[in-house]
Length: 208
Image (cartoon, rainbow, N blue to C red; front, side):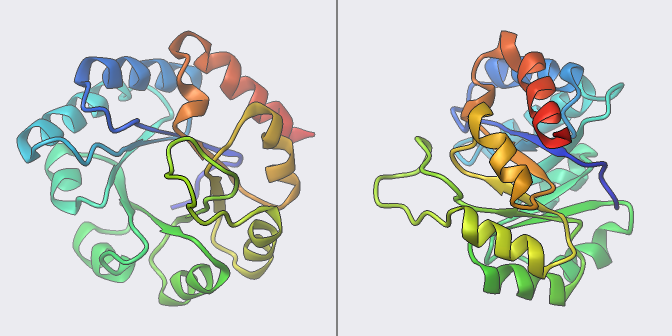
């Protein structure tokens, strides 16, 4: 399934604050983000399912598509648009066979070899590549890929590559210049009241 570029994705912050998460989802959907990744590993299954259903409702009349982090069962039960797979998770082809052609499938990759392997396997609509820059959501010492590795991955694969990790307004243009199809971020969207202006800024950065 093709997504219009630049792809802008809000990733939820994993704080298990349903009210706060839904507020960010509503604001992001209204602001015109393309993807919203529900990434709440601390939530029990029932709470995650409920949150995902409510997120789908909140985004229903917008362009935003809801994808669930690595939980195909929750994504299907909640009526989400797709799933975002971890690097070593289910095969995309297996998900595609179960969920159908219109189901959106993404995967996280951390280096060129993983990106090439994901494309070779087939089934993915997009890839998240990172961590591109140092990020406060990652522990100290976490491996940083950098812009050169991002550029190489974008050059080598045809699947849209979305940069993630340490994305800021100031770095958006450099990410676009490296060939990325878009950005994904948690902290970039921390200011709920500023989500619309952030989305507009990122789109302008990619346009130029």
